[in-house]
Length: 134
Image (cartoon, rainbow, N blue to C red):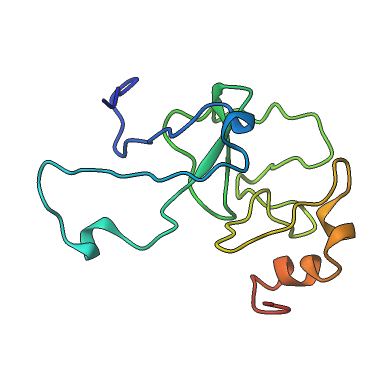
C-alpha cells in the first residue's frame, strides 16, 4: 500500500530505506495499476529516481538536471565540497551527483573517488555521456 505524506503532483515510490539490506541481492519490483495507461502516458525510463540522505525526506539526490520532488527542501544548507547552489545535481566541475547504470558495474573500493577508478568518467560526465560512452 502506498501512503502519501501530503498532497503532491507525482507520488514517489520507496522500494527500500536501507541500501545495505538490499545490496548485491536481486530485486524484482512489480507495480499493478488499477486502470491501464498507455506507454506514452507512463513516460520513458529512468523516470526520476532519487536517493534520500540519512532517511531525511527533505534531502534528495537526483540524476543530473532532474527535478526535486515537492517534498524536498528548497534551502541550500550544504557546507561541503560539492555544493549544488543551482539545484541541478551537478558539481561545479560538471560531474553528476548520481548516475543511472543499467549494466554490471564494478564499484570502486571504499574512499576511492570514481574518477580515480574510471579514468574517463570526467570527460564522459562533462560531455553528457557522448564522450567515452563505453
